Image (cartoon, rainbow, N blue to C red; front, top):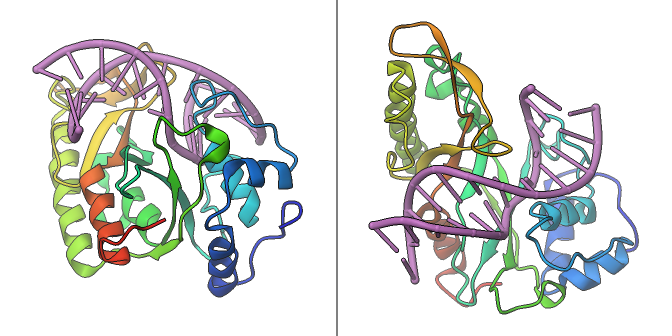
Length: 229
DNA sequence: TTTTGATCATCC
DNA sequence: GGATGATCAAAA
């Protein structure tokens, strides 16, 4: 790795690159890409994700396309503890509250986003300084039929709540693998959605997240519960 | 303002 | 300790 590479031409090339990054520290990656290492992530929550994007030649920026458009692959860093277990839920995509009632699981943005994901575990134990945290072995994943069905069940439950328009009931408690949580600048952020009476009203913007239990199962299955990373 | 990238802070 | 709700930054 020298500087930001061109986008990978195919899955194999992407996987090879990702595998080559395994074991490297964030400090090493940052230096190779001429990026400053922040003191901590409190005010740079997306820094690790952006660093890895750059290291792998993902399309920079915030466009609503997969990170590797040509390959149809989404990149996700996955913070893990010393045992290799995810320490955070994973943001999937914004919940399109106003039109969600017209969408089925088959054409849902959640399903599209998760169709093919390159997971990159990253050490995230709080006792580890950012500089020494290392990347783990990549996992290129698509939902199994069982996973797809389970996610579809959650989608139906969650979208039913949205369709009913009772946003006070739309909490993160619903969904086995998927959940809906606020996703905005802060608690004052608002977007428009149809309420119980069918008229537009202001409510907090939401996003779909994968629960840790789900991503934990993914990595466990792939790494055989071994040390991982 | 919305999209991307997520983690933080607090409560249970 | 884990989950929920709140929050942070950059880019377009």
